[in-house]
Length: 344
Image (cartoon, rainbow, N blue to C red; front, side, top):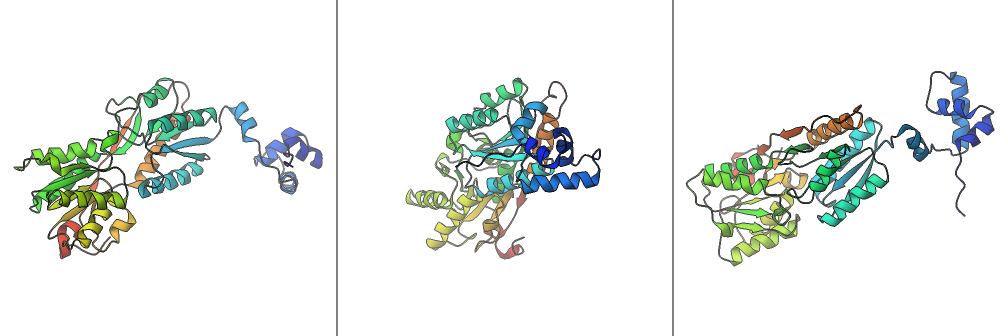
């Protein structure tokens, strides 16, 4: 049988105090003497009483929850972000509800609707398609606190993100500066419209004497190691043989490295490899991988700060703000050989 829920009234009946006094005591109100608070709190614990947040939210119009929509929970960098966001929101008194869109628009919209039905106070989101976020913009237009963790070209919503265009430019420029001329680009986000990294790559090539080779730009179906392995095999099967490869995630870059090692290619002498995110496995791989770091802590802290500001705003929401963080290129042995120090 389903256990009967203990109510505030049950604690009041057990202790002989009014429901209002019990409520204040359980909220540590200094208006209630310490001895009384202790007695009431012990009675509540004995009865296994937990506050009814739904009832409280009806009164306060706050659920003290935030929804976080991820694209892929298997992506290690997003898992780190989710952990930091949950920890940071907890410090502000908010619980975090999680959902993943699995990189599908239908599931993303469903997740947003579910969060709103559950009366979350605000939403943080990694949109599936960076070019198709009208449904997110609509939330903002209706006064709903929402922060996107990717940039919005129209600047119509609050965003906190890394400048991925600049990050890809820095990585490509680095490879050009060390003499690489056939630089492949494995884009694991291309089918979904994340063009910022590809645009940065193309800009760096356009600023150099190198003519871009469209065949060296390859859309990769996923973000994993196996995706990078298969994509690299495809490049060599087609006879393209790049002397450098940029992968849009470190996980894909690890797959590139694995294939090159299996094929007997020396890294970086035969093929230089660069990735994005700065995950632990990339730092500690057999040949540490150069990468454009994703500042997990800074992203989480900035996004939380802005969302809390929106959720606690009195009256209309302030104008949308863009927080675009400068990316840091970390040069390791996969591009610079033994000339660099051990992994940081």
